[in-house]
Amino acid sequence: MNRTLSFVRLDFITVKPYATLKNLIIFVAVALIMIISSGGGSSAIGILMVYAVLFSSYPFAVGEKNGIDALYVTLSIKRSTVVLGRYLFAIIVDVCAGLLACAFTFAILALLRINFTVLETFIEALALLMILSLLQAVQIPIFFKLGYTKAKFMAYLPFLGLPLVVISFQYLVKDRVSSAQLTGLFEWIAANPVAVVLFCAFLWLAAMAISCKVSQGLYGKRDF
Image 1 (cartoon, one colour):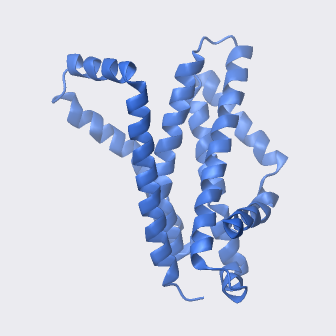
Image 2: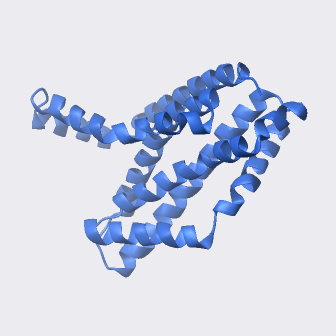
Image 3: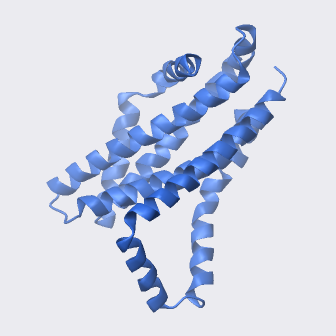
């Protein structure tokens, strides 16, 4: 476990030069525009967390550019440690980004005097975090299989395809599920929040565990 945490720290050191004030100002400006244009905070939280997903992929790019993967082999760092460390790094970045996005959004909404519910906004942020994490569960094994350069386009297809999936789901549900059924579902979710949270947590853990296992198998077969 100590080796994994050390590897996470190494990843943070690797991508630290990209965490500049200039990039932070750009992210804040984009989020501010999203809040003003939409009149709500969910879009701003979403865009900031998408940036976090992009940021968590930088270690793959830096590692490939500088041949760090070969260095790991030379230093006898187990490939399983590399995989676990990279997943833990991504999770930490996602969670920190989600918390910072919520804090920033709450502050801006309050300053602009836009009505919002703290609990509802927090739940939206949590839902976005889980969705993006599940997409990362698809993305990260592709990076471990092909490397950053070869996988760059393919790895981001799940994110580009998400709106299409949502639209398709809405189209399929539209004629098959009545408004009364949807209302009943939402009422059940509101009445059983603990069950919903536990189910979502189980789904997330299962997806990340499977993704990590796949990544270990793929990364273990690569030659450096």
